[in-house]
Length: 65
Image (cartoon, rainbow, N blue to C red; front, side, top):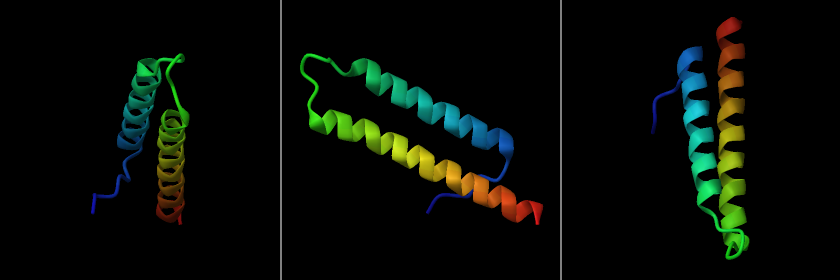
């Protein structure tokens, strides 16, 4: 299991890195040959990032309390 990221700067760095990966995958897709699996993979990256951001938000609320 990975360590929790509670430092805001590390959270922002994580999100930036994941967005960079997303952009690299998106740039690598050839629109002429892209298929449903390629689109599903992009959506999974977005869903995973959304889940992580929710975790960060939840952690931040717990720390504030």
